[in-house]
Amino acid sequence: MTATSKRPFPFLGPASTSDAEAIRDNDWSAFQHLPTVYDHWSLKPWSPGQAGYYWYLTFSDPALVELASHCQTELAHDGLDPVPLDGLHLTMLNIGRTDDVTGHELARIADAGRVAVASVKPFRLSVGPLTGSRSALRFSVTPWDQLLDLHRRLRSATAQHRDGSRLAETAEFRPHLGVGYLNRRQDAQQLIKDVSELRELPPVTVRVHEIHLVELRRVNREYKWENRAVVALG
Image (cartoon, rainbow, N blue to C red):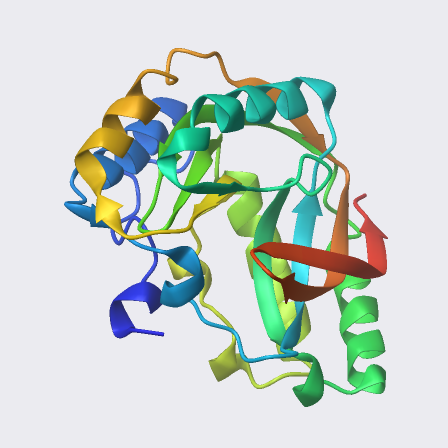
């Protein structure tokens, strides 16, 4: 993985984490300025058999599934490996590789996470419009304030049982919801044009009421996960 691929995207955060238009504009502006986009699977390689533990938000809201399905269909010619419609998610935090986290540690992390979010009430997010990154297409997610608070809580809870220096800082967290991963390097101009034609589709509202601690694997050109814990908010 290159140094560039490890940097958050967009590199600079929005002017406001509570204003939806500021977040959406920042996402779109960063994507529009990319001269080239890359093959996700090469940009972020995994070793054979590699697996990891992550904190995830997962979604099955019918309106979101319909929006994602429509965008995937419209962009099928753009070298896109779609995220399965039953696998729509927002990555909160990478905990570590499975071969580096014991079962006892994982159970303690889950318990710490449960305590950390016990006072957080369920909340709603707006998902959309469509935008992109260096190697994927994704929806903007707004607002960020509650997601940033959730990230801080989960990071702090996880750091009780993992080396905190190995966990992503909340300042580097860029909430988004993936639609698909690009499977070839290409000039970004046509892709940006194709995405722009879908940006008039209205955002949808989803409800966040639980967090999943998952074991994630990469199978061919798709991510698959199994729940290791489901933690309810509030």
